[in-house]
Length: 462
Image 1 (cartoon, rainbow, N blue to C red):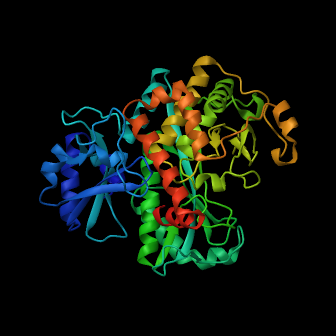
Image 2: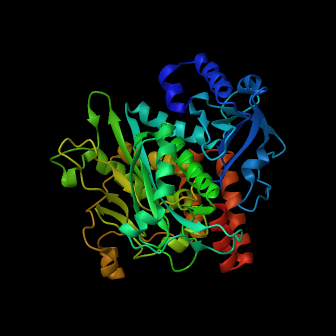
Image 3: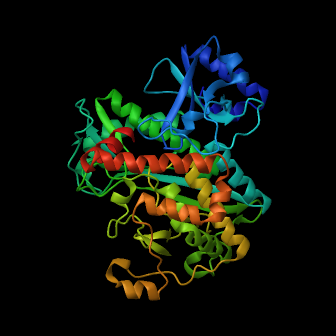
């Protein structure tokens, strides 16, 4: 039984019973309790089928130091935070999923809660829920979608080497054929687990592919993105391949983005970003949301482009969103207003291009929502959209048109986050302190490792 079936046929306490039935019917031995850490890595503990019922209620213990672990798995002291304390990993039974790449195992996504059962300030999934609640206070619902790219390689057991699986061109039919069996297996696995694939194509660099999932409510969109990455990597490994979502797995490639789409809806009113009479079909509220994103963009990058490797991709001319502006179908603007599909405006949304797969999806989406809502509340004007290619404009002309310079390193983005009181407050404690500590540690460690080592670590971890 998949998470879709659980959600469809059960409610409340019945969901836990349905999980137990699914475990028994599918001869599951181990159930993983998974969460995404502050590095964007999927971690977890597992329990046996016999222990599941008790652990569904009590959760599993976790030292808070795990949320202060860097990309090298070193736990760092965090000012004002007692890292020897314990929180509980508590599963959300509605996310129960059989793992297609790991027969005999299943998993659930989890929240990190205090020993008394309350929300813990270091839980990323709770942070996204808080952003969704902030929108609900304005009588708005958040709809989102992630658009990740990944690079497919042959796994020779040497993480430092990246042997690309194919040499296809962008949108090349030969590249479709080369990866067909793997991609079809991935699509079928996602569909059988209630995750609707919207489209797929080979991307710009050799070995690069993009597979997108249909949009949905914000928390579900983030959950499904987690499953997509897990299935993509797991099924590749089962075939002797390696799928990496690293922003730039090695020099010379175009780079893997994870464009983030978002819109605000209201029951009875539909998509609040849609206005056929508005410029580029975007409503005034949608423009205010863009205004908020642009106002907080330098700090936002610390959460959406949160690795040293991110800034190897976030370069002008890569269509990565390296310019601090917005525009209709502008591929190098940080915020793109996509062309509308059809005439009802249902597809109206904004796309944050300055986002990649080293981001924790709950933190990235939650921070984007908070930034946009600040623009809605303050009715911020995003200014005139940029319709020209920013790469063709001089620095003076970009400044004249209000295009803001963006951080060119993780260190600069973290400095911007420290200066942004609004986003820093939204992150809260101990999340902000933990996040800042481990990111600064990553900067130091990557510098010691050197360029070649930096690329290899990110290609392996992500």
